Image 1 (cartoon, helix red, strand yellow):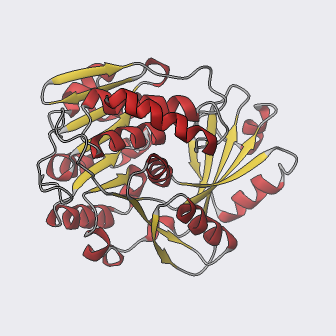
Image 2 (cartoon, helix red, strand yellow):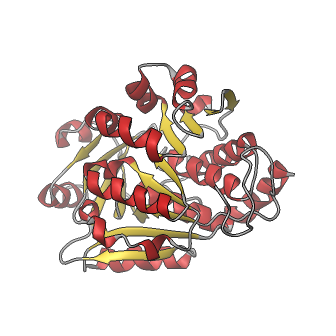
Image 3 (cartoon, one colour):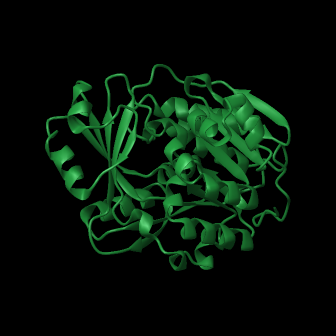
Length: 346
């Protein structure tokens, strides 16, 4: 695909690392994350959720869970996986935007201000009512369990995504959770391709893969250039373990990425498979690890870094975020991170 910014073709392996600048816009579920640090895991069984799962809940259930655990330490942060990715890319210096649907409440104001503060251009569609919220229950071992009230987040209409929104960008990153809105995803991918954008998709959850397998079989080879998944999502889609799954997936797309937690990640492209190691120590909280890996990888690609360099940047960001509670890396770490990025790309 021709780079709009420089007029060159971005070679996935090594070209124009100094001059290429790929503007990226994200489309996702706009959710405010409320992170609760559990003292004991028995709370999960009382609530009726399985550890490590992501369950959809009603507005009433959200209120009940949060109000009955007022004594727990909590953190409020803008969330939704694609939002996390765009924020991290912006912190690295990338030009990013975000499309989402929010309500008219205080959480909506908080969300928009948080994006502007880090330099992400918001493209919000507003509606009446309460914004979406994800209650993240963090176990003592760092594992997170998510109870998600989507609110208006997944109700974006295809007509609400204009070609003008996409015209300033070179890549769009879409989360798999939006596949519940089939026409939105299909229409947006079509508009992106018409505008000459690359399309990156994250499979998001193995339940999403199982529920929308037919749709994925259609849209991935037709529209998707870069495909992100973790090992459970990749196995659900291909029936194969991570290394063979990434090889299979790379026959459908230009670049496939399968993250494997503490074991790192596999990257596949045009018959070549690369493995990078994970970074970071014992996790305090794994929330946002995959989102930040995607941010690092897409940022690397946006500056023309090689696949391995891009994956190393992603692994580094994931290593930083698992050392904090929540999906965002601490502000005082970014200068250090930028120096490490310069070292990685030479």
